[in-house]
Amino acid sequence: MNTTSSEADTTPSTNWMDTLWRWADAQQIGADILPRDPNALAGLTTLELQYQQLTELPPEIGFLSQLTSLNISNNSLTTLPASIANLRQLVSLDVGDNQFDEVPKEIASLTQLSVLKLYDGEFDSLPDWLGTLTQLEELHLWGNELAQLPACLASLTNLRKLYIEENELSELPDWLGNLTQLCELMIDENQLTALPASIGNLTQLTLLDARSNQLPSLPEALKHLTQLSHLDISDNHFTAAPESIRHFSKLITLNLGRNPFSSLPDWLGELRQLKTLSLYRCQLAELPYWLHQLSCLEKLELGDNQLAQLPDWIGDMTTLTDLYLWSNRLSALPESIGALNRLTKLYLKSNQLAALPETIGNLSALIELDVSDNQLHTLPERVGELHQLETLILSDNRLHTLPESIEDLENLSKLKLDRNPIMDVG
Image (cartoon, rainbow, N blue to C red; front, side, top):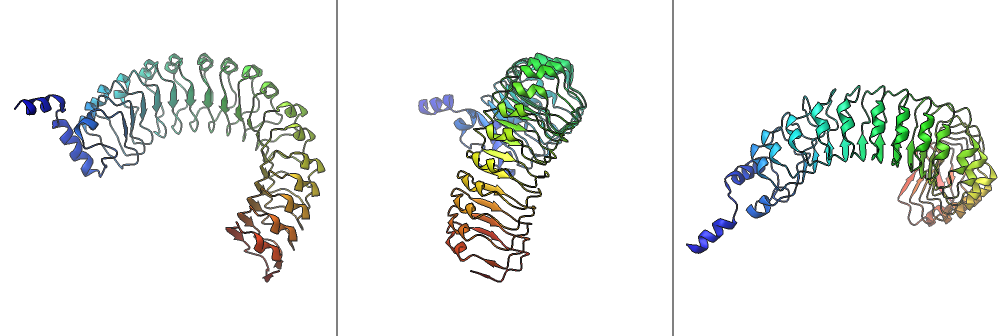
C-alpha cells in the first residue's frame, strides 16, 4: 500500500492526459510529438503540431503548463480553446496560416511571449491588446491584409525583429522609429511610396528589406543606419542609387536589381565589405569600373541588362564564386574570364555567344555552367578540364558535335542538349 501511495504521489493525474492521448491517436499524432508517458507529457516544453490538418484543439492542451514553445501553424483552426490562456510559460507561439477571422483573444494572456507568429492569416486589422505583450522581441505579421499598422505596436519597444512584408501598407507610421532595438525589418511586397525619416533612428538595424514597393527614393536620415549588413531595395522606382547607401560601410549584401537606373555612382565601389551584389534588370549597357574595387565580392548578379561585352578587368575579380550574366547581348567572353578560378556557378543563358574561350578550362572550381539559348557551334576541347562540373546546360544552341574531352567530366550528373542539331561526341 505504501509503495502504491508513493507512486500515486509522484505520478501526474491522467484524466486529462487520457483525453489528450485519445485526441492525438484520432489525429494520428505520434508519441514523438505528444509523449504517451505521463511524466514526459507533464514536463513537455515544446509541442510541434504544424501541418497536422487540425480543425480544433482540445481544451486539455491548457494543462501542459510547462510549455515554452507551441507551433500550431499551417492547419485549419478557426478558434483556440480558452485554456490556451493557462500556458503562462510560453515564450514562443506560432499560429500562422490558419483560418482565424481575427487574432485569437486568448493570446492576450500570454504575457511572457517573446516570439509571436501571426503570418498568412488574412488579418486586415490587429487588436489593441497586442501592444500589452511588451516582452515581444520577434513579431511576424507577413502575408496578411494590413493597410496600416495600429499605434498599439509602438509599445513593443523590445522588438528586435519585425516582419510585415506581403501586406497592403501604403505608408509606415513615424512611431516606427521608436522601436530602437530593431535589428531586422522586413517591409517588402507592400505598396510603400515613401519611408518615414524616423527609420533613421533604428541604428541597430542590420537587415532592411524594402523590395517590391513603389519607392523612388530613401530619406537622407537613413544614413545613420551604419550597422546595416543586408539591404534590399530591388523592384522599386529608383532612377539613382540613394546617397544614404554610401554610409553603409558594413554592407555584405546589396540588392539594387529591377530599378530603372540611368547610371550607378562610383562611390558604390567604396562598399568594400560586399560579398553579394545584385544589379539585374538595371539597364546597364556596360560594367562600371568601380566593380573591380570590391575585393570581397563573391556573388555578382548582372542578368537581364544590355551588356554587349565584358571588360578584360573582369578577370581581376578573383574572389567571385557566382556570376550571373543571363539575358544580355554578349557575343563573346574575354580570355581573362579564365582567371576566375574560384568560380563555381556561371550563368550565361540567353546571350549571343558563338563560342567560348579556351581559357574556360581554367575554371577548375566550376560546378554549374549554363550557356543555353546562345549561338554556339562548338565547345572548346578544354571544357573537359572542368573536373568539378556537375551541371552543364547546352540547350537551344547550334551544336552539331561535342568534344571528346567531355567524357572526362567524371562528376557530371546533369547534361542538357535539347534543341541542338547534335550528331555525336568527338
